[in-house]
Length: 243
Image 1 (cartoon, one colour):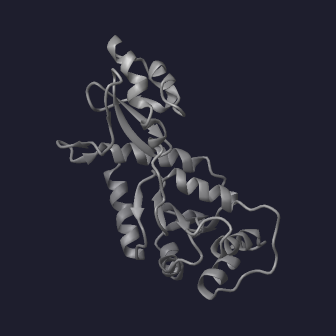
Image 2 (cartoon, helix red, strand yellow):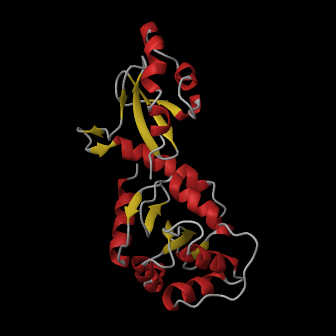
Image 3 (spheres, rainbow, N blue to C red):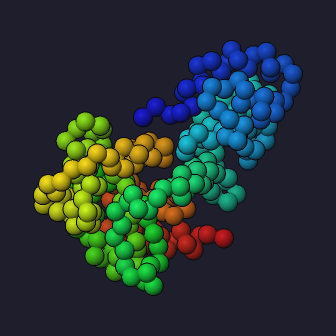
């Protein structure tokens, strides 16, 4: 997937050359020179003399005079933290917060037993997704709620996409998903519209590169397939690290 910043990288040097002579640019002035970028996408940066630009969950740094662009992760060596990944996580969390849970397929323990919630981008034809779902009872027993979003890796108009459409059309999505991913048995019914396309776009926004992709409530990308014990250990560690 092409990072969003490449959209404005090509005209960047030309657009900035004249303005850079005037010293520091405001966020509004900088945004006006960058296609697809709003002033609200530009933030103060932990790097002196730089702005931070966030497009979906992609992050780049631009000098305040508009002369330089840096694409890469910034680390705080004293606190041993990846500051760029922290910004990406917050962006992912904001994106996922806007998703209606009614469009998801949710497997959860009883409400009083929920300790953690994860969002998982899944593909019905993905082997590691299948293994994760085989262990759903163990995951739920550990107090973890799993919210599935559909991400057919092969893209639109493919067999995996058609399978996802059928599953998300079903009246009982939980059963339909379990039958499809574990037994390759699909529901008979179909419908005119499903959330699969919007889920796929969400996956692109949060930079899903493969399935399963597991995200915490805070937008931290926990990785791909994790065994139940590994998953709960990571979630507990995140909880302990939170201020």
